[in-house]
Length: 415
Ligand code: HEC
Ligand code: HEC
Image 1 (tube, helix red, strand yellow):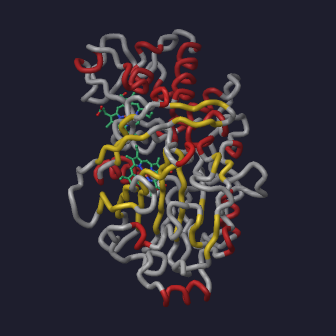
Image 2 (image 1 turned 135 degrees about the vertical axis):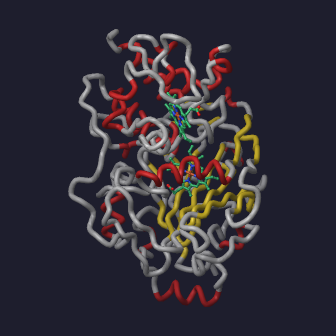
Image 3 (image 1 turned 30 degrees about the vertical axis):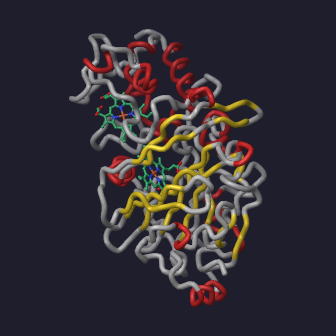
């Protein structure tokens, strides 16, 4: 018995194949002029229409809950157990592709880059409930909504994906957004709760060794030369740094929004994920005819569009003008090119700007994105910090975007 809802298997195992195409290299999928990342989102997961369970569940699901009432699928507000087995979410671990049909898989576009790891994401709505999408910039999720995101490196059998951590955010009772992290054991049979929003140390972060070494889009894809490196399971406070900050101007559930769902799950899907979820009855209102998207008219074969998309996916949760300077797509160029830094805690050398046309080496934005390359004494003396400041290993910069930023700055005419 699998808990609530009939079981459903994703067609591909683990993090569903090509999801890394979108996660790892924004340019590989979403960069094109169409602004549609479908090529990257070749996620073969159960997907939007998984098993027909839909948002509302079914009589069968209710029956299942009589048998396994403690599953999070049945009792979404229950205390989170120490063992992920007891959540009922991954009954066939180490095969994480087996899951209840009520777990709706999706791939946000653009995604967050996370040390080169592949990811698998699910939305679980409480039975019979819908998302209120009246406010297009900030949807309202019913209490008991749970998002589940698992991160995989490449150390499974024969280099297959191996789960490292599973993060959860729940619209809970104690707070509207509760954050949790489970850490997987070596053979991927179980995971242990290491971050518990309800109690525990909110600054606890857990180092783990991961290895990124796979073939992606026909090319070898490695971080740190394919050697192990340290990845941090973020603290409760770090979750807040990105998620609560994003919630100040948009949603605390960052990735499940109109713009990021406005892309197909697979290239041959009939509709966008947004439309498919609307059709499956996940929202109160129909999907808008003109869903939010990121555009750019530059004649640079999509480079600035790719950069805007990367920055939206990786920086704009903090850099939206409320606290940190605004790098959302419409104002990204205006607020960076030729503009001095404004943060009081950053003191770049004389002449450095966020973006110095023609010169990446004195452009704070580029230098901070390089992470390990911040040259001393600039790094320490000028308090330049790797960006984003949380959630990334210094060795694991997303190289495609970094090169795009370098090329873009280099090509900008001097002012
Ligand atoms: C560096 C910023 C950052 C940090 C730190 C961070 N997240 Fe996220 N998270 C994101 C972004 C951006 C997305 C959406 C894009 C994606 O899924 O690739 C996301 C997505 C998620 C999702 C899927 C639902 C959603 O909101 O889109 C879950 C669950 C999640 N994060 C949990 C956590 C937890 C728990 C922590 C802390 C332990 C955490 N995250 C730390 C940026 C961050
Ligand atoms: C978790 C929140 C967060 C994320 C995500 C983030 N930043 Fe920042 N950023 C900050 C904070 C806070 C500062 C203020 C200075 C400091 O504390 O170092 C800052 C400062 C900066 C500055 C210099 C300050 C200025 O006024 O110009 C630049 C440039 C910058 N960030 C670029 C980026 C880029 C590019 C990304 C994405 C690749 C990014 N940041 C992602 C929080 C964030």
